[in-house]
Image 1: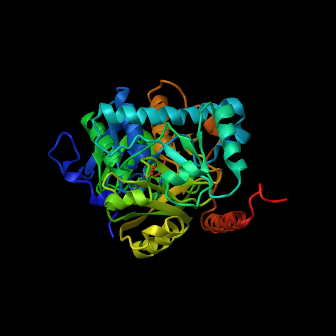
Image 2: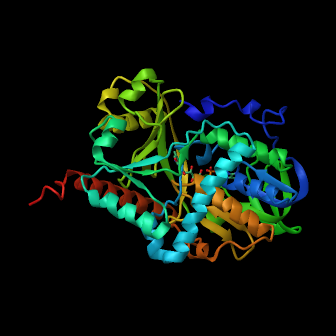
Image 3: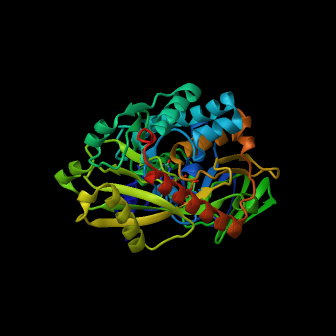
Length: 437
Ligand SMILES: Cc1cc2nc3c(=O)[nH]c(=O)nc-3n(C[C@H](O)[C@H](O)[C@H](O)COP(=O)(O)OP(=O)(O)OC[C@H]3O[C@@H](n4cnc5c(N)ncnc54)[C@H](O)[C@@H]3O)c2cc1C
């Protein structure tokens, strides 16, 4: 089963300048100023940030195809914040620096809107906000979150009463919600291909089917090898997400590749409104939450679960269908037409790692399950740093390349997920605090 996104793009038509159906693999040896490894949104946003600042001689090397990784497979939610939740960000950094980093992500949401306009990227934008729906009958969860966002981060998440939510989402599963207005959802692969096209039109060389196999010191700084070519580069940026292996250990050993899954139903036509009478995207308050949204062609795109295992599409479809029916039993007879998985890269501290290591290699990784706006942040920060405009904000140094301990780390992560899921299952069964004597 192909991903819905791959099935609905025409890669041959995606370049505004036209003629090539793909970006040619790297052959031969030449020199560039900046070499970026990874044609996901972290790599391409850096390339676009550099191009917009007039930095010439930039190349992007992508092992497969542009958007092959998480950036072209995700839920399509674009909103502020990071994988580390805002309460923990505040605890770790204190009020000023936490707010500084959070604001970078809301600025990035605005920048993505502007780029969609400026580069005429047709990516099915639905600019209708995001709803956080409360899975638990505990109003304090929403109140606490709402106050935190207002008092510490300066944004209003609007309360949605249980009855109002139930009339938008035709389910009795939730206990009210919060509405985040400055958020949108879109077709992420169309966006990534649009950014790649803008980058290529600005003169950046993109090479697909060009996996970096070795990085060594040499030339003006580094030599980056692919199977059929090499680039001598002054600057190198590592942006291989959860897919990077055996190139640059410092970054790879600092993240864990974690899978999450998505499916798309058949087009529902008028039946869509039997479940979703909203244009907003929805996620819930559990640790391993469901996330879903209506698509312009009346399908529901549904995602969820986190696992250290990459699963086959038919198993993903079965698992996610079960989750869908827990919330919308009225969709029992609906067909699932697409199911797929993708790898996120997680640091132990759950924050992106953005900066330059002691040996001079730049990196942007560890975006976890919340990467659309943060990869845009990293692109801007690295482009500004490489072009000499300003250094990466100090606050990111708090979230360095701490070891993630490979297989051991994955086993620990799976244990944590299982424990958190059990904790959520217990909390969901607890009687409401309002009804306890
Ligand atoms: C299923 C799923 C749902 C998600 N939903 C959301 C969501 O709704 N909203 C949100 O904000 N975030 C979401 N995320 C997270 C978000 O997609 C990621 O955080 C973000 O896309 C990471 O971008 P990236 O560029 O770091 O990595 P990727 O997009 O994975 O890109 C890395 C690229 O590097 C390439 N690469 C790796 N090794 C090499 C090499 N040796 N040489 C050359 N190239 C190499 C890979 O092929 C890949 O294309 C989701 C993620 C997944 C998997």
